[in-house]
Structure formats: structure tokens, C-alpha cells
Length: 244
View (cartoon, one colour):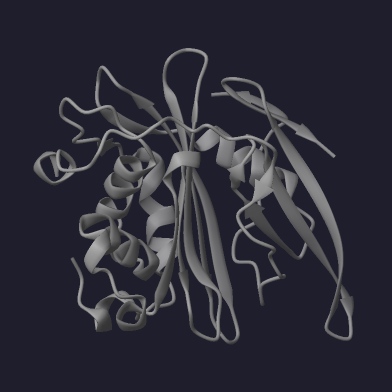
């Protein structure tokens, strides 16, 4: 991985301005996991890439909290390209990750119509994502922040929607340049899952601009309608403070 990453350009850190969410979300069909806190410091073929299997996110959920990821950055200064490459390379079984990994390997040769995933590359803002172009919403969003302690905080939002069910997961990692390791920060995931407990569904909007995370909440109001709400996680330099 270090050899592949060495070919990337040294990218600017997350220079985000006013808050802009990754996209406008709609409530998903079902919510497989709802549960965390107040303040926390803290190359695939087209057929392989576009085929999303139910349970892919669950398999990541089962392992990620105890699974550190080798950064493989070598002597370069990493940005979102390198962070997303390391994460997606670790979990390529999830199709949006595989698509994004393929794109990051050879951006100029990536073909959305072959993989079935559109890429939103805002690397100068510390954001990149792969969104499925099919009937159901399937995606991976990636973002990072520079922390006051010199580390980077990384976030990944995974969504896998099917006809009768869906699953989603937000993951956080700390990156220590000296150790070149991505270390899970599950307390931030727990904070979000606790905040959305009691709602029928939710969507995490990682910022393309700005530094705060916006969470859309949905409550089933019957007749295929939803009552909507929002939760704001304000960036404080090392983590987030929950605001309503």
C-alpha cells in the first residue's frame, strides 16, 4: 500500500469553510442499528464493485472497533485521498469502498458507468465519496479534521439500502503521523448512536465545507410520511459537542 500511496500528490489539510452537508438525505427503509454520548474528545472488476450484498456493513460493524489500520503513508503528508485509500483497502468487500478504492488507484481511468458508482472528489476540502447510481441508496462518504493535538480525526459514513431493509454505520479513527496507524475511536460512534436512539431512522451528513456534522432524524408518521428533525455536532478542535 505504501508504494501505491507514494504516487499520490501531497494534499492540503481539511480547509473547510461554512457548513455544507454531503448531500440531502431521505429516510432509509429500515434501521438495523440504533444506539453514544454528549461530549467526546477524541482494483475490482465492474461486476464486483457494483454488487452490494446485504450484511456487508454488519461484517464491518463486527470487527472495526478492535481493528487498527496500517496507514502505509511512507514519507508523504497524508490527506483524504490517502486516508480513504487505507480505509477502503481494508474493507473492500463493501462495494462503494471497492469503487472508491479503484478510483483512488487510477482516477483518470475510472469509469462510473462500468462500476455503477459516482465519485464526489473534494480533496481540497478533505472530503471524498462514492455513491451508487442504482435504485437504492448505497454509499461511502469520507472526511477528516486536523486536531489541536496534531493528530487527524477521520470519519466514514456507510449506507446500504435495499428494497425491504437497510443498514448504516458511521466510523471514526484517530491518525497519528508518528505511528502511521489509524486507530478506531468508537466513543464517537457511540455518541451518535445514543443521540439517534428512539428515532426510526437517521442520516449522518459529513461536511464538505465547514467542520460540523449534521444528523437528520426521521420518525414514522404513518402513510409513508416522516417527521424530520436534526442534531448538530459542533467541532471543538479534538472532537464534537452535541447541539440540538
